[in-house]
Amino acid sequence: MARNEERGGRRDRNNNREEERDSEIVEKLVHINRVAATVKGGRRFSFAALMVVGDQKGRVGFGHGKAREVPEAIRKATEEAKKTMVRVPLRESRTLHHDGQGRHGAGKVMLRAAPPGTGVIAGGPMRAVLETLGIQDVVAKSVGSSNPYNMVRATFDALKHQSSPRQVANKRGKKVGDIIGRRADGASAPEAIEG
Image 1: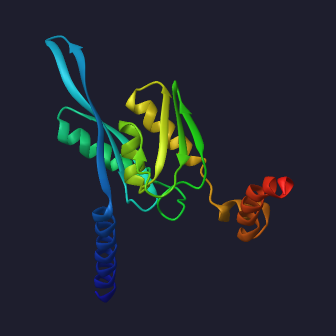
Image 2: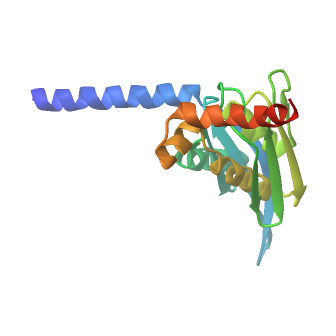
């Protein structure tokens, strides 16, 4: 009996944690598409929704859902988005560590780190991804396909290739200070040549 109560208590605690995580998550509807299937009696309409979710602290995901009604399509898309969330390293919790490019199909995107006060300069679907991720300063440009599905996937491709100085240092077997120090040395090297 005590064991069952203990298990129930654990379940309650886990549910509370999940609810806390869900309450922190920001959901954004990127696109709704009405899809028609031609059947014997005429056309049958259903709706496809593209959702982006994130905790505004470096985690973001996107999902796609289809249903006969809009709210149900949004719910399905949101659930899928929560399952596919990825973590992206951010610099000072406001911008990217370095510039990046991503592509999916004919959609190409370019992301650039920006100084404080720049804001999020990006188009619709990209803006939704970057804002839910928690980025405050970034300059983004999309080239090619303006299809929201391709743009979101291309943005995720660019974010997937982001790496922090800590990750680079671990890969190379060096200290974080060496990596960041080199960045500063590289900037001052031309001045030393001129002087």
